[in-house]
Amino acid sequence: QSLELLKKAEVATETDNVPSFRRRLSLRAATFNNLCCYFRHRGKLNAALQFAERALRIEQRYKDAEDPAKTHLHYAVLLSMAKRHEEALEHLETAIAVLHDEEAASDEGSLELGTGAGLNPVQQQRREELV
Image 1 (cartoon, rainbow, N blue to C red):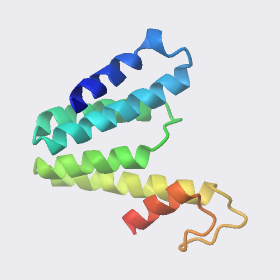
Image 2: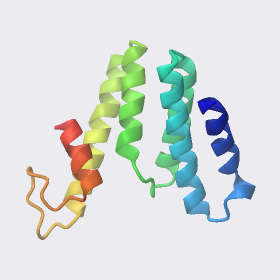
Image 3: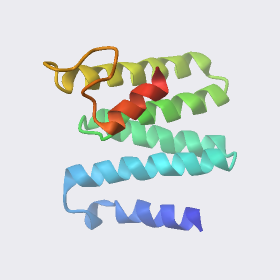
Image 4: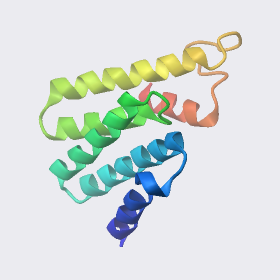
């Protein structure tokens, strides 16, 4: 049943179904991330990798992605599971760099670097997961 819902979400995020280009890409990347998690949980590593790669392509091509650090983390986990550790490390480093950039940009005047003060709750949670 989960896969059916995710496949419906994939169809719902096709070009004709979401008039806002930016919103459609955001939803599409999130759907691919969710499909990646679904297949990883089911032990289907190749399918999970394919969906993670699709999400990454969207997020790299269109810089307005909602959560590129999470996508890089998903992909890094999958690459590590596939024994592609050097590539996994590159994506972990990218995720950390994205989070540092977000932290630095999220209110440079009042942000206490290193403590995470000034971050919104989602950013704070991501920071805590990586630190």
